[in-house]
Length: 92
Image 1 (cartoon, one colour):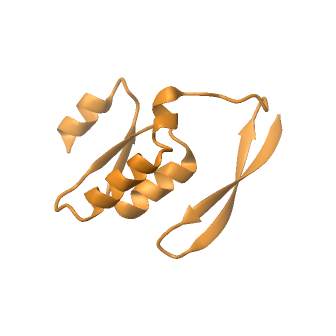
Image 2 (cartoon, rainbow, N blue to C red):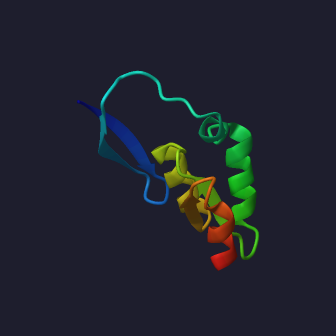
Image 3 (cartoon, one colour):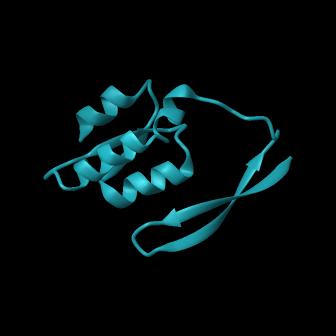
């Protein structure tokens, strides 16, 4: 098992935290849905949602920790899987 360090940015406070990430392999673990959230268009969407009243953001569980932190700093965010997204949103 290898330990990697991931930098997580706290956008609200402008701080950088070091978070230990434990992985069995150094190989890239890809997920097209999660990687789509790394685009500048996605960040633009979050910025627009941040100024929209009663916005709620749902983010995919495999999205990077950095992207989750950015989303949560801008918009109230729920993390879920693709299999439970409907049930999760209907409970809100």
